[in-house]
Length: 243
Image (cartoon, rainbow, N blue to C red; front, side, top):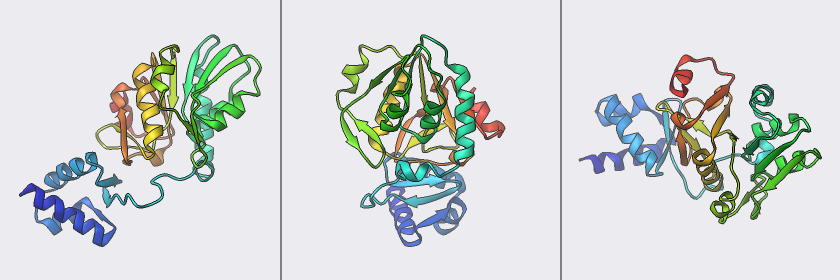
Protein backbone atom coordinates (compact mmCIF):
# COMPACT_ATOMS: atom_id res chain seq x y z
CA UNK A 1 0.00 0.00 0.00
CA UNK A 2 1.07 3.57 -0.68
CA UNK A 3 0.87 4.65 2.97
CA UNK A 4 3.12 1.76 3.98
CA UNK A 5 5.66 2.73 1.31
CA UNK A 6 5.57 6.34 2.49
CA UNK A 7 6.28 5.20 6.03
CA UNK A 8 9.19 3.12 4.72
CA UNK A 9 10.60 6.14 2.87
CA UNK A 10 10.45 8.20 6.06
CA UNK A 11 12.15 5.37 7.96
CA UNK A 12 14.94 5.04 5.39
CA UNK A 13 15.59 8.77 5.32
CA UNK A 14 15.63 8.92 9.11
CA UNK A 15 18.21 6.12 9.17
CA UNK A 16 20.45 7.44 6.40
CA UNK A 17 19.80 11.19 6.80
CA UNK A 18 19.79 11.58 2.99
CA UNK A 19 19.38 9.22 0.01
CA UNK A 20 19.31 9.60 -3.75
CA UNK A 21 16.14 8.89 -5.70
CA UNK A 22 17.91 5.95 -7.36
CA UNK A 23 18.88 4.48 -4.00
CA UNK A 24 15.32 4.76 -2.69
CA UNK A 25 13.95 3.03 -5.80
CA UNK A 26 16.36 0.13 -5.30
CA UNK A 27 15.67 -0.19 -1.58
CA UNK A 28 11.90 -0.11 -2.13
CA UNK A 29 12.00 -2.28 -5.28
CA UNK A 30 9.83 0.17 -7.21
CA UNK A 31 10.30 2.36 -10.28
CA UNK A 32 11.97 5.77 -10.26
CA UNK A 33 8.69 7.39 -11.30
CA UNK A 34 6.90 5.80 -8.33
CA UNK A 35 9.54 7.14 -5.95
CA UNK A 36 9.36 10.60 -7.51
CA UNK A 37 5.57 10.66 -7.09
CA UNK A 38 5.91 9.58 -3.47
CA UNK A 39 8.57 12.19 -2.78
CA UNK A 40 6.50 14.96 -4.37
CA UNK A 41 3.57 14.08 -2.12
CA UNK A 42 5.72 13.81 1.02
CA UNK A 43 7.32 17.15 0.14
CA UNK A 44 3.92 18.84 -0.17
CA UNK A 45 3.00 17.37 3.22
CA UNK A 46 6.11 18.94 4.74
CA UNK A 47 7.69 15.57 5.60
CA UNK A 48 10.82 15.70 3.44
CA UNK A 49 13.06 18.08 1.49
CA UNK A 50 14.31 17.36 -2.04
CA UNK A 51 17.49 18.76 -3.56
CA UNK A 52 19.68 17.75 -6.53
CA UNK A 53 18.17 14.29 -6.97
CA UNK A 54 18.29 13.55 -3.26
CA UNK A 55 15.80 13.59 -0.41
CA UNK A 56 16.14 14.07 3.31
CA UNK A 57 13.76 13.97 6.21
CA UNK A 58 12.44 17.31 7.46
CA UNK A 59 13.32 17.56 11.13
CA UNK A 60 10.97 20.12 12.66
CA UNK A 61 12.91 20.15 15.89
CA UNK A 62 15.90 21.75 14.19
CA UNK A 63 16.43 25.45 14.77
CA UNK A 64 15.90 26.49 11.17
CA UNK A 65 15.97 25.25 7.59
CA UNK A 66 17.60 28.40 6.36
CA UNK A 67 20.79 30.20 7.23
CA UNK A 68 20.74 33.54 9.06
CA UNK A 69 20.99 36.68 6.94
CA UNK A 70 24.59 37.31 8.01
CA UNK A 71 25.66 33.82 6.91
CA UNK A 72 23.88 34.07 3.55
CA UNK A 73 25.75 37.32 2.77
CA UNK A 74 28.94 35.27 2.43
CA UNK A 75 27.42 32.76 0.01
CA UNK A 76 27.82 33.37 -3.76
CA UNK A 77 28.13 37.09 -3.06
CA UNK A 78 29.84 37.92 -6.39
CA UNK A 79 27.08 36.22 -8.38
CA UNK A 80 24.38 37.90 -6.30
CA UNK A 81 25.96 41.30 -6.88
CA UNK A 82 26.00 40.75 -10.66
CA UNK A 83 22.41 39.46 -10.68
CA UNK A 84 21.24 42.47 -8.67
CA UNK A 85 22.98 44.81 -11.13
CA UNK A 86 21.02 43.27 -14.02
CA UNK A 87 17.76 43.84 -12.13
CA UNK A 88 18.41 47.59 -12.07
CA UNK A 89 17.47 47.75 -15.76
CA UNK A 90 13.86 46.95 -14.79
CA UNK A 91 13.55 49.91 -12.42
CA UNK A 92 12.60 53.39 -13.59
CA UNK A 93 11.50 56.66 -11.99
CA UNK A 94 8.03 56.79 -10.48
CA UNK A 95 7.69 53.04 -9.98
CA UNK A 96 6.51 51.31 -6.81
CA UNK A 97 8.71 48.28 -6.22
CA UNK A 98 8.68 45.64 -3.49
CA UNK A 99 11.84 43.93 -2.27
CA UNK A 100 11.96 40.83 -0.09
CA UNK A 101 14.40 40.14 2.76
CA UNK A 102 16.88 38.17 0.64
CA UNK A 103 20.57 39.03 0.52
CA UNK A 104 20.31 39.46 -3.27
CA UNK A 105 17.70 42.20 -2.79
CA UNK A 106 20.00 43.81 -0.22
CA UNK A 107 22.74 43.91 -2.87
CA UNK A 108 20.18 45.49 -5.21
CA UNK A 109 19.19 48.09 -2.59
CA UNK A 110 22.84 49.08 -2.21
CA UNK A 111 23.01 49.82 -5.95
CA UNK A 112 19.73 51.76 -6.24
CA UNK A 113 20.22 55.29 -7.57
CA UNK A 114 18.70 58.15 -5.60
CA UNK A 115 15.69 58.88 -7.81
CA UNK A 116 11.92 59.36 -7.40
CA UNK A 117 10.85 55.84 -6.47
CA UNK A 118 8.78 54.04 -3.84
CA UNK A 119 10.22 50.95 -2.16
CA UNK A 120 8.12 48.58 -0.05
CA UNK A 121 9.96 45.90 1.92
CA UNK A 122 9.90 43.58 4.91
CA UNK A 123 13.69 43.69 5.16
CA UNK A 124 15.48 45.57 7.93
CA UNK A 125 18.71 45.65 5.91
CA UNK A 126 16.99 46.96 2.78
CA UNK A 127 15.34 49.68 4.90
CA UNK A 128 18.73 50.73 6.23
CA UNK A 129 20.16 51.05 2.72
CA UNK A 130 17.18 52.79 1.10
CA UNK A 131 16.90 55.26 3.98
CA UNK A 132 20.18 56.80 2.78
CA UNK A 133 18.51 57.97 -0.43
CA UNK A 134 16.50 61.15 0.08
CA UNK A 135 14.44 60.95 -3.12
CA UNK A 136 13.15 57.41 -2.52
CA UNK A 137 9.93 56.97 -0.54
CA UNK A 138 10.43 54.04 1.82
CA UNK A 139 7.53 51.95 3.15
CA UNK A 140 8.29 49.21 5.66
CA UNK A 141 5.91 46.31 6.22
CA UNK A 142 6.52 46.76 9.95
CA UNK A 143 5.58 44.19 12.55
CA UNK A 144 7.66 41.98 14.82
CA UNK A 145 11.39 41.95 14.07
CA UNK A 146 13.00 38.58 13.36
CA UNK A 147 16.65 39.36 14.02
CA UNK A 148 17.95 36.09 12.61
CA UNK A 149 16.50 36.73 9.16
CA UNK A 150 16.58 40.55 9.45
CA UNK A 151 12.92 40.75 8.46
CA UNK A 152 9.59 41.91 9.86
CA UNK A 153 6.60 39.65 10.46
CA UNK A 154 3.31 41.51 10.16
CA UNK A 155 -0.01 39.63 10.27
CA UNK A 156 -1.75 42.79 9.00
CA UNK A 157 0.18 42.68 5.72
CA UNK A 158 -2.92 41.99 3.61
CA UNK A 159 -4.67 45.10 4.95
CA UNK A 160 -1.55 47.20 4.41
CA UNK A 161 -1.22 46.15 0.77
CA UNK A 162 -4.79 47.24 0.00
CA UNK A 163 -3.46 50.78 -0.13
CA UNK A 164 -0.31 50.03 -2.17
CA UNK A 165 -0.20 49.15 -5.87
CA UNK A 166 3.04 47.29 -6.61
CA UNK A 167 4.46 47.76 -10.10
CA UNK A 168 7.34 45.32 -9.68
CA UNK A 169 8.10 42.67 -7.04
CA UNK A 170 11.75 41.59 -6.86
CA UNK A 171 12.62 38.55 -4.77
CA UNK A 172 14.78 35.49 -4.33
CA UNK A 173 14.04 32.04 -2.92
CA UNK A 174 15.45 28.94 -1.27
CA UNK A 175 15.24 26.84 -4.42
CA UNK A 176 13.44 25.82 -7.60
CA UNK A 177 12.46 22.21 -8.15
CA UNK A 178 12.54 20.30 -11.45
CA UNK A 179 8.88 21.14 -12.12
CA UNK A 180 9.28 24.89 -11.72
CA UNK A 181 8.04 25.10 -8.13
CA UNK A 182 9.50 28.00 -6.15
CA UNK A 183 10.34 27.19 -2.52
CA UNK A 184 11.36 29.00 0.63
CA UNK A 185 12.56 27.82 4.02
CA UNK A 186 11.08 30.41 6.36
CA UNK A 187 7.28 30.37 6.68
CA UNK A 188 6.71 34.09 7.20
CA UNK A 189 9.02 35.18 4.40
CA UNK A 190 7.30 32.66 2.14
CA UNK A 191 3.91 34.16 2.99
CA UNK A 192 5.19 37.66 2.19
CA UNK A 193 6.50 36.48 -1.18
CA UNK A 194 3.39 34.50 -2.07
CA UNK A 195 1.19 37.53 -1.42
CA UNK A 196 3.39 39.98 -3.33
CA UNK A 197 3.79 37.58 -6.24
CA UNK A 198 0.01 37.51 -6.64
CA UNK A 199 -0.53 41.26 -6.26
CA UNK A 200 2.35 42.80 -8.21
CA UNK A 201 1.87 43.77 -11.84
CA UNK A 202 5.25 42.22 -12.70
CA UNK A 203 7.82 40.16 -10.82
CA UNK A 204 11.53 39.39 -11.03
CA UNK A 205 13.05 36.28 -9.48
CA UNK A 206 16.76 36.68 -8.71
CA UNK A 207 18.61 33.39 -8.26
CA UNK A 208 22.13 32.05 -8.55
CA UNK A 209 22.76 28.59 -9.96
CA UNK A 210 22.98 26.98 -6.50
CA UNK A 211 19.18 27.33 -6.25
CA UNK A 212 18.47 24.86 -9.08
CA UNK A 213 16.92 21.51 -8.14
CA UNK A 214 16.39 22.58 -4.53
CA UNK A 215 13.30 22.77 -2.38
CA UNK A 216 12.38 24.24 0.98
CA UNK A 217 9.68 23.97 3.61
CA UNK A 218 7.02 26.14 1.94
CA UNK A 219 6.14 26.55 -1.74
CA UNK A 220 5.82 30.19 -2.80
CA UNK A 221 4.44 29.60 -6.27
CA UNK A 222 5.67 28.50 -9.69
CA UNK A 223 7.89 29.94 -12.39
CA UNK A 224 4.82 30.45 -14.56
CA UNK A 225 3.79 33.27 -12.21
CA UNK A 226 7.09 35.11 -12.63
CA UNK A 227 7.59 37.73 -15.33
CA UNK A 228 11.34 37.19 -15.62
CA UNK A 229 14.09 35.13 -14.00
CA UNK A 230 17.51 36.76 -13.66
CA UNK A 231 20.24 34.24 -12.95
CA UNK A 232 23.87 33.33 -13.55
CA UNK A 233 22.69 29.89 -14.68
CA UNK A 234 22.52 29.55 -18.47
CA UNK A 235 20.89 26.10 -18.39
CA UNK A 236 18.10 26.07 -21.00
CA UNK A 237 15.61 24.13 -18.84
CA UNK A 238 15.23 27.01 -16.40
CA UNK A 239 14.72 29.57 -19.15
CA UNK A 240 12.15 27.39 -20.86
CA UNK A 241 10.06 26.93 -17.74
CA UNK A 242 10.31 30.59 -16.83
CA UNK A 243 9.29 31.76 -20.26
